[in-house]
Length: 320
Ligand code: DP6
Image (cartoon, rainbow, N blue to C red; front, side):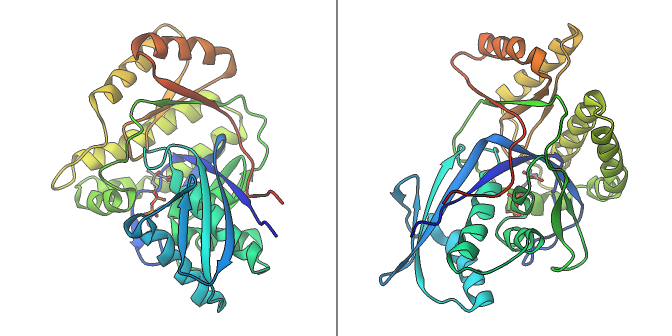
């Protein structure tokens, strides 16, 4: 009996970067994302008479690397009164912890695999709430296309839903993998430290407006409005990090070189925008007709850089 579940990662166009309740992972802002076809995690669960085990990409993980997964499993076990020891096997088709949001697919897949294994019947809203407790961004990976995580006020009211499950928009993402090493500051830590920035309050205050503007851009299929706002929102998040006390940044010299290249491409009339998560890598938002040219320009400047093309991916998928 194999019960493998696939969850795709998502990239936030309006970011989640601040918690109201760290334990329940309730955010201070709503967020909006695009689920990606190219990056995903497959997870399956088996029972064992031995101790809990976590395998990532066929490698048994040590205690330190398994800690977060096990404490999330404990939460699920307590909630549903299922107390077996389990073997979790995950395969990540996404560089782990390099700012490509592997935790979003990881915890969405784990929540769904757990429910599937125990035949726990949950609807997608409930599944989204469960995934949220593993990693906030994971609640959006339950859905395909464009997903909204409404911040809510409580565990019950903080979950994601699909804005458009199968969008027709011409929107492509090029993930430029400038550095795929494990990041030094986790998202959990970064968004906590960022709250000391004097710009944190204004950032929260802008959330309603930015959500409204992004939803309008999506409904109008307006790539330009979407790209400009996604870039602004990402820069706001990184400006908060740079003005935190003490300050920090995920940017590396190559991140800035990539930003300059995008500005240059735009000056040449090749429309593209960027967004950046908790890592040094850049994700370029563009339209299909320009993606080849943009890719070539990045390859010319960054020797042997790995670039992955992505577009809209589906929500949670049960493989068998
Ligand atoms: C920059 O969901 O990884 O990617 O809830 O602490 O696990 P935790 O954080 P996580 O943060 C994601 C931050 C982000 C923006 C986003 O995806 O909205």
